[in-house]
Length: 298
Image (cartoon, rainbow, N blue to C red; front, side):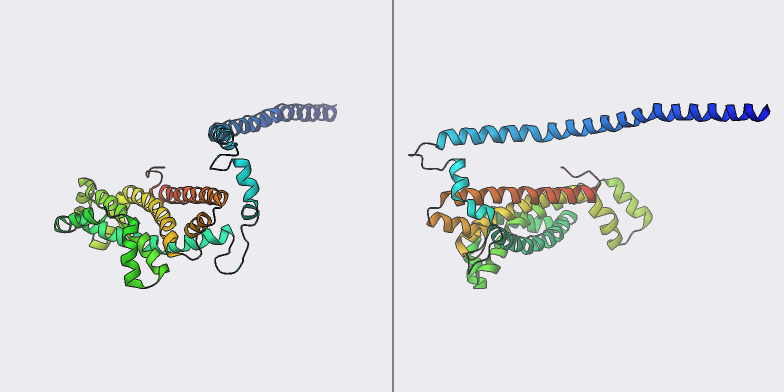
C-alpha cells in the first residue's frame, strides 16, 4: 500500500508539473510576441514618416516634370535613362569611364586623407588655443579670418604649390574641415569644470596624464561636434574641388555629365552624394557616442 501511495503521489506531481509548464509556455510566447510588437511599432515610427514623405515628394516631382516641355526629367525618366549606371556600379572601363562605386571610392579616399590630417592638426591646435591664453590671443584672430575664405578659393593656390590635382584636392579638404575642429576643441577645453582642475592638483598628475585622463574625456563631446561638422564640410569640398581638378571622382562625374547634357546621371549622382554624406555623418556620430558614452550629440 505505501508503494501504491508513493506512485500515486509521483504521478500527481508529474501531472501538476506538466500543467505548470503548459501554463507558462503561452506566457513565454506572449512575452516574445509583445517584444516583437514593440520592435515593429518602433520601426514603423522611425521609418514610416520618411518613407511617406519621400513618396509624396516623388509623386509631386513626377507630376511637375512629366510634361514633354519640362527641362528636368521625371523620376521614371531618370530611372530609365540612368539604369546602366544604377545597375552596374562596379563597372570598370578605361580612364574616367568607371562605375559609381569606383567614382565614390576615389572621392572617399581623398576625403579620408584630408580629413585625417585635419583631425590631427585641428585637435592639436584646439587644445593649444583652449589651454593657453597667449595662444588664443595670437592665433584666434588669424583662424577667424582664414576660416571665412571659401574652400574653392584655396584650390588655385594649392595647385600652384603642389603642381598636381590629387594633393591639391586633399589640401582643400584639410583646410575646409580643420576650422570647426579647432574651434569646437578650444571651446571644449575652456569649458572644463574647475573641479577637474582641483582633482589634477590633488592627484599631482603630470601633463600627459592630465591631457589623456582629464582634458580629452571632458572635451570629447565638443570635439566630436567639430568632427561631425568637419566631415560634412569635407564631403562638400571634395565634390566641388573634383569638378575643377578632373580625374576619377564623383565631383568630376557630375561635371562631365553636365557637359554631356546627361541630367538624369547628375540626379543619380546627387542621390549617391547625399546618401554617402548621411552615412559619414552617422559614422562620426556613432563613434562619438561610443567614446563619450552617450554624452555627444546624436
